[in-house]
Length: 423
Image 1 (cartoon, rainbow, N blue to C red):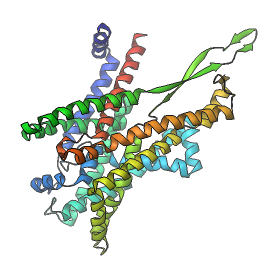
Image 2: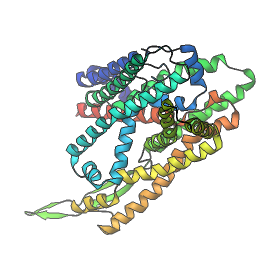
Image 3: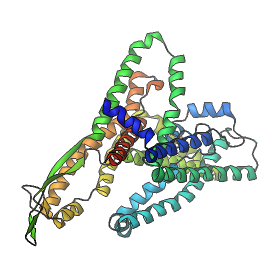
Image 4: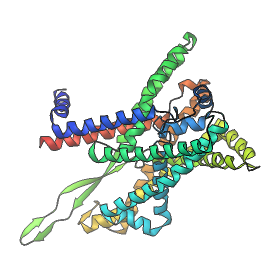
């Protein structure tokens, strides 16, 4: 306990750490101020009714950082940048040049890879902004706008998305933690007061056991997320002894940490993007009065409102994307080659191809457990709604994963900063 309070004191007394923390807080204040500025022409009453009946916008509001619920100038949030990053990750599988840029060219290659993601964010923001505003105008949420005013709104929301992307990168560079994740985290936390007040005002004593059970289940889910996020399998590594100039080097032992959940929340974001992509495209096409679009919209909405079909598809996509993203980020051949190059080996396993095969089999078994857990957490809200019939009690598995992951990452980074200052 004394160590904990000493670290807390050091955060506020060490200028470098204090400035980083204050920078993050300042960026979050700016974000929340921007999220409170609505675009022109919004009918708030129609907006609230439309939002309460549309699961599509509710899911996207998570990744906008809460800005979409108010139709603010940052209503797109960091969604376009996340989509661009996903597309670039997919390109590493389809394009050998992109994979080489991302994996083999070091920091310079990753910086160029990130720059491509930024460049792709702009056209995606334009498409998403145009599609959302067209949908909202057709539903009467936005009224009384001329063509020029509509174009100005598109420019505003695109500029807001680019601004948030820039703020997120500044937080990553000058603050603590991943800036994009922190922005999403801040948007989720900002919705907690309204969620709690809704539960309080709709409280029914006859459902008290249900609320108590929900509380225990929420704590159990958070505990499970923490355990699964932190769980890892240490692979023992031994460095061979080498003699140079009469001096013996090596001979030490270490371990290679292999996380149970290598992919984090990325597979859930991938799956949501695939599930929501058809509706986003149809929203954009609805502006052109194509005769087949209304029928396609009804079919897509029917699928989303069918909890069983939607839940099964969601589960399968999260499960598959977990394996996919793990395969992109963890290359057993590269790890085995790097170990052999440094004179290291896994005890009992021959270096080279045998080590690669061993690591590949191990990561497959670990990913099987991690993928099943992620898929179950993702579909947990759907299962709760089917079991209880109370939509207000649905535990957002995605939001819990994001919040817990961001908090754990911040704690690790702060602890690393404090340890460095103490040494």
